[in-house]
Image (cartoon, rainbow, N blue to C red; front, side):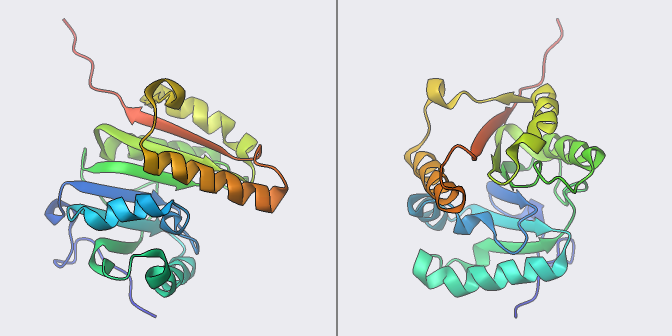
Length: 209
């Protein structure tokens, strides 16, 4: 099984990566890049300056996720982009990225984890706000215990601006990803009402007159 990436080791550093960094917090044994629509993966594959970082504090789970993704790469069209996908043992409460360096953050079944302390979730929200670029986005996906995430979602709104997908519209790859997630929830729970996907944008700094 392949090794994990190490930031700050001299071989990889966020400052050296190109313009578009996608970070998944709490990727575990099932990285979200396996869940997205094929056209989302095609966009990722065809943008040379885009890199995907899967983060988890649980190293065995992270290694399982990496192995699963590598085994599925040929089938999902990611066979030739190994150098753009990175697995890091890191905590969402202390993200290993500089301020305002990340374009997109994904949290799948993290804020809704009933076993995780609320204080830790709040630390993650603060760290997410720190590393996101202006207009960078946070995508929150919950389909096991979404009601547990409600309190954390309220906190997110104090830092980030919620995106009204119906008013703003979504790129095709995002619409298709949401549809595929709904289908998965229907397979697991018998309906798709269990799942929610929320999107937030980092607010521009306020200018005092």
